[in-house]
Amino acid sequence: MVQIKGTALKEAVEQVKAHAGRDDFENILGLLDAETRKIIESDIFSSSWYSLDLFARFLEVQNRVLAGGNEEMIIRGAEAANERQLRGVYKAFVKVGSPEFVIERLAAVHATYFQGVSIEVQLQGKGKALIKYVGFQKQHRIVGLTIIGFFRKALELSGAKDVLTHFSTPIEEGKDYSELSVAWS
Image (cartoon, rainbow, N blue to C red; front, side, top):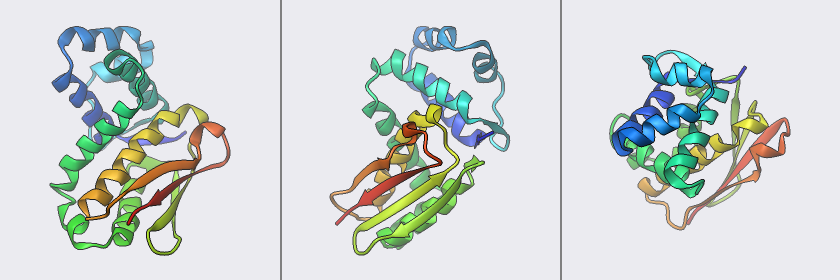
């Protein structure tokens, strides 16, 4: 089973609580299945591991309620959350490193957020990289949007321009792997 670090789940829930009204949050809770709702309403521990399926279900419902299904909002939310992290704890390596260095480091950091997923970076010459994920399943599709936001914001903060990120092999294809293509100038 693929799992996500409690830090990511906790941040997502707290972000919704901080930016959505109580009625919207209650609406989200009401649309969740019993297992997901129970976890979201409980104390989420940063150091614990949670089902990635549960995280994906929460993101899907949150996006439907708060953004009418506009998935660009998931990317923007991930960018905002990651900017807070990258201006805090991880600030040093984002500012110091080249985009290539940042990609390598972020992939290593990402690996600490997922259990059951391996991550491999392939630098493909100046201004291009391919990040291969092995372990995601079709139902984790929406998590790919958070990954896009994560890399996009980190590269922008490191000084990269014209950042383009997309899954050239999308998670929803259900292959044994997915690939994120990243390009910048």
